Length: 225
Image (cartoon, rainbow, N blue to C red; front, side):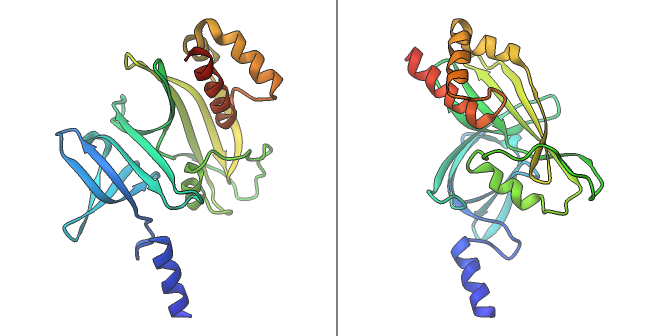
């Protein structure tokens, strides 16, 4: 039995501490370039790197951007992140989509916002998750968890202006509340806003669902390019 468990750990690249390591590249703010094994801790909003036989923790205020091939996904999905300053300190943002005018981002930190009684029942089922980041969330929220996590989605224009569009509260891996700022889409899509709404309606897409919104953004990119 010990041999079997050992083999599974090797295949998943999981260390003794339970971290999953992937091959990646980091560009630091000071111009330093790192290429090697990295582990993203989305709960703490920090990176770990293996360098010179030691493990080093790296916070967003030291990083310009990074990317890695996520071994947790079936097709080895390539994920890209940037670091941006916020009022409460710098944070990592995953680039979900980008074009010449704006990028659609997810804040790469799962924030515990509150706790709830274990006998409470969320009413809205979790929809098809965006791949691959919810895999990390799943590892943080066991079935009996009393924690509510917040997922935040932003648009950033090429002038650097960051706008919060969508906030989702997740309880026991179920969406319990969504808050979308529709005025942000007006600025993002501009004169094509009604076209995008019509496209979403025809294809039964919801603009407050990150997966569906990515489909709409792809349509917008095809329209303006």
